[in-house]
Length: 417
Image (cartoon, rainbow, N blue to C red; front, side, top):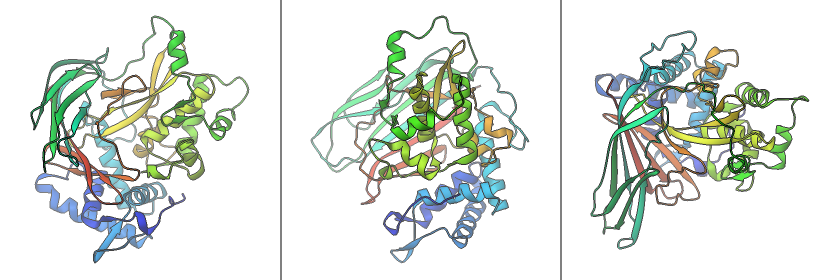
């Protein structure tokens, strides 16, 4: 398992924030409350073991500086290779617990149980805190909202903002239009209550319309770009390969010959972002899902990138997966979270935990028609730095070159039934 390319220039995050990152990777259930001090000590010890096993760092203001992507990928490699059994045990128990917490399953199962399809009720609070760099400028800031469909029904919603603003809850998200205040951050918050259930296979009432087929087979859409290298990968299957066979082939390659970690998006070529994945063998949830979608589109199979939030109260987080249109079944989800749940073991039944099925989620994006826009532009190089809060997770989007906060997102989930 090759390390991702990096240099001292990207190792700019201090040890304390890296420990916060590791807590959510392996101690999500112990990251708050009375269990936190012991969990933090274990996470710090795990980081030191990773350093001893050649995780690079550099001196930063008299202390160690790390690249978060290198840390997450080093953790994934340690779990997959079995080089740190204690860390692997923590990582797998934590991940499997997060995957099954919304439906109440235990975390020590040898294989994923059947999904629980009973409806569940949740209250989700999302807050985005924006750093305002241009006082007096007219802003249009955004928050995601759940997509209502046959698996999710909203019963209540509310939105509010820290400044005087025109704040609207719309079908495709929440908008706040305001004048940027002087010397202060702007906080935009929303609360949703809804009933949701896991995905169930259904027979579509009708085939996709020609317009939808055209939309979901386009070869250039955001990260879904069919470069010559992606097209060659897509065509490298046996004669007579069906859409189902194609998805299974790409899935097996991702699960057995690649690794799920954290990628620096500034390293991707803007016209061929998925070539980096094929060259280096690393993907994150968004890039892995985009690669499956691109391979499907290269073969004329409709596919789309979908995003939303997991609903484990211990550590809800933003996540991406792919939906592929399968004849007789319609839009079918495939979520590569299974790589983490299996610890990179291609023989583990956990790798297919979300192959063609999905647990209860709060879906907020179905690209390209439904897209959550925060209203601010991310810099060329940026980092995600998550940490546990008293009731959920806060993720800071930071400028990698200056360390400045672009915006922070806090998510909290409360089960109501």
